[in-house]
Image (cartoon, rainbow, N blue to C red):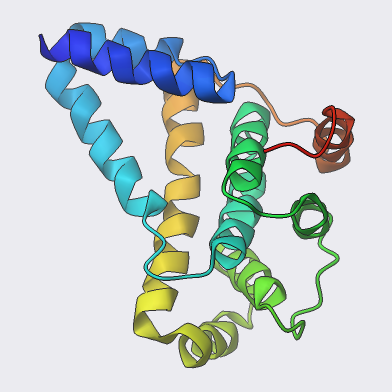
Length: 183
């Protein structure tokens, strides 16, 4: 029964995002409680901790781009759009063209995420700026998103099903090619 419920949830996710989850189905088939634990781990990273949606996705997009899994990046771009993040914001984050001081905080979130994943010397400074703007809760939300962004790419690599990331500009080109500006 548990495997059946997991399979239903995976099928719904697969349909919603046009994303292949065969690797997760394979795990569920051999270890349903393990598959549930994988989903619980990802649920932490999906919780925004009160952050504005575009700020949360700025951190997530930067971190998943760094994780270097093209299919994961495509998925997060779709998720961002469905959550209401503007196409221009997604593109600017991926092309690293958002100023840190822009008013929505997207630039700060992107800079912080980049500092976390690259051990940039400005990490502490940016972390303090994030905390001043969104509090400890918001900093935890960005940290969880950044940490979670590497979870599935690492899992897929370990399972032998990861695909290397094409250049980010190629993903943005494909993203722009989607018909109309629909979520």
